Amino acid sequence: MDLPLPATTLPPELPPFEVARPERQSVPLVFASPHSGAHYSAAFLAEARLDSTALRRSEDSFVDELFAAAPAHGAPLLRATFPRVFCDANREPWELDPGMFDGPLPAWVNSASPRVGAGLGTIARVVASGEPVYRHKLPFAEAELRVRRYWQPYHEALAGLIAETRATFGYCLLIDCHSMPAHPAHGANPADFVLGDAHGTACAPRATRLVEETLSGMGYRTRRNDPYAGGYITRHYGRPRDGVHALQIEIARSLYMNEARVERAPGMQPLTRDISRLIAVLARADWSSLR
Image 1 (cartoon, rainbow, N blue to C red):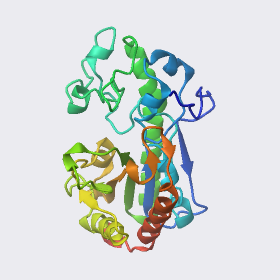
Image 2 (image 1 turned 90 degrees about the vertical axis):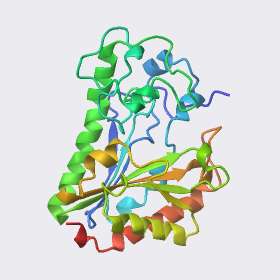
Image 3 (image 1 turned 30 degrees about the vertical axis):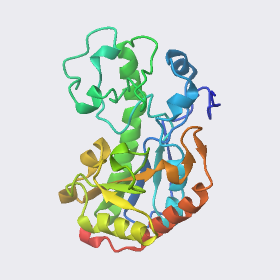
């Protein structure tokens, strides 16, 4: 069944991101949700060969809602409004598949990355199930428009929040918020949360350990860096030597949503409470050692 989308058009006045800010930022934390955007333009829907349900399964649906308590604890929350399948903010800006376009790509485009090979570059060729997204090839100008109108403003906002936080506190801990489908490699022992710190290079061990211990104390099964060690955002912004630490949190969708119907499930409310408790723990911690 084709589900109704949250919006059938992306109004010109709708910005590519939204920031929920506290009255005053009181903690050196920034929360970001690059994949929970759910506004689909009519032009994009016309280009796609898939129905809205298949397209929406590429979203990290409702993740921004799970972390909505961040401003109440003194931290900003950044969320993309555009969907991941339209433009992926957790990729390099120019990871593009040449086979998707109707002409040659500029030589500076990164067409050799593993993400491009999997069909999941900055402009996705396929959805998570492997089905092609588009009815026909795209002009490169379309990729340029999406990168410049959506990807770049999102990252300018994220970089700005990190810079503001560093200016105020001398350091910043970025929590990059995601969700994950069931992973076949984990069989009968799936993780509820996967924490990605690029194998210890993007974030101070203390921060990863505190998140891990807090979630485990709530009864959740956690795993580090397997199978998600952190994407572009974690690796690009996570520079502990410069006082910026980045930790990617992947949440099992089965905990809070019906993946087939892209709907909130009964687990949404208790999980939101637990995520709010996690945010509170992070907000109370002394992060001065991150300088």
